Image 1 (tube, rainbow, N blue to C red):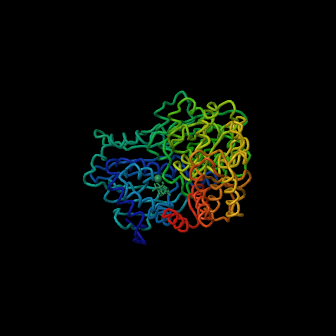
Image 2: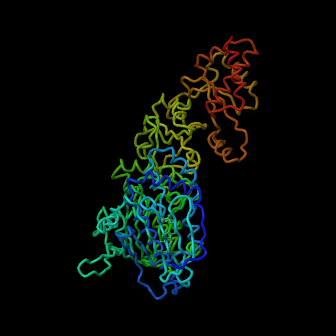
Length: 623
Ligand code: ADP
Ligand code: MG
């Protein structure tokens, strides 16, 4: 063969790591190499079809795109070739020698320690490198569509530490991959075996996949097409079965799990489009990464345009997978044009509604399945109220919470249920936000509600405080934080307003002392009847920033003004009664500081000076 400019390169270290892991952990599922290579070939043909809309020359007068597979039993090779877009020499080095995804390194490291390697690595998308599970050596010949024949590239590797690249002549455009099978992999030399794998994984590839048959009698070769090569979404809903929908999902997403639900729609009228939306069962490994790509696969009049078109779904629905095939968008659409396009906006509106309605239907018809969804994606959906005020009512109905009465940390209570269980006098939805479920559940703010048998939503996800800012009311009931002052509370608790002159002189004197000692560290000091067991508590003024909000701000590196609380004291508490009777002013002073710090600790979960607090407590304990 005529080769020139041969150069040897080392794989990027992440690639070496991935190769090693894959060969050892995916061995039981090695047939997936074919799915990966066919998927790449099909992508390359999609890209060619798309690029040739503006540059028809790329077709080189051959519009008959296909994927061909041939097996050579004597040489123990499988050849997979496509006449797609192909690669330049530089492309092969970048695409087949490195992994561009960020977060790969930490993902691979976490994988080393995990014993569910197979599942996780499958989720990651093993791609081209999976060919080394069954091959000793892989040779790839490729030429970029529309370029001269002498610009071909040969890429070869034994899948160890290095690969080499040379220039070759390649007459046909596209990519041809030769797998030199390992000794023990003879099963893949059987045509029926290869056919079965294609049926299993790649039936919905829209490009024809052909396999070469050898006729022993006539000693002739012929090509046989094995997949349907039909775009599933264009078919009538009634002609597609559940199994086909699920297979198509797997092909679309690389997710090995079945989807939870889907919604397939052919829409006619001014806007003509087909959408096929899926809700996954499991979040992809990188959904929280900054550069996670989401969005739908975009087709225009059946022609593939792009992956991850984010323009059709808001961020808070980034877990929705699927495709949109529009008849109205122009074929030569670019991302830039897509962004401020009226058709896109209208499609987005419709798809958001579809997604939310699909979830809403699921929540009504199959609460168990909905719970799977909520546990996996609830945190993302919670971004909805802030991002999409227009659909707030649909979103509110989809939110799930835990509460006092729920008695478990699982978020499975809808607002509808909360409201349906309220007493007639209650006209607000009460909630508390805290750092953890345990901390919310044990907050002294709840004592009054326990006593009066009023349920309170317990919120402890990081996003909750922020989300609650956007929740104003639900079915006419206002949301109310119970760590904030709330004058309407006395109405439903039927407690009399506390009057200072009903209490003994010592208590009133004590109150004055507290005010004097704490000075302007507090907004006010007063007696309360909201507590049962706790001696004292801090309340935020109704128009003041809450503790959780202040924490969010400072975690984001923003400066927050010192929060000033209302300090409430429980006059019926035994400790308070005891402290009231202390006559030594120095000791009384110490006790007041301690009570205040205790309340701060309970409210914030930490203190600015914990050592002072401990020293003071120890001093008082000795006494
Ligand atoms: P992924 O498909 O997820 O990007 P792969 O490891 O499967 O990852 O492939 C890496 C890259 O190599 C592809 O993104 C593509 O750019 C290139 N590539 C692989 N196979 C082909 C092919 N048959 N034709 C053109 N490019 C290819
Ligand atoms: Mg791939």
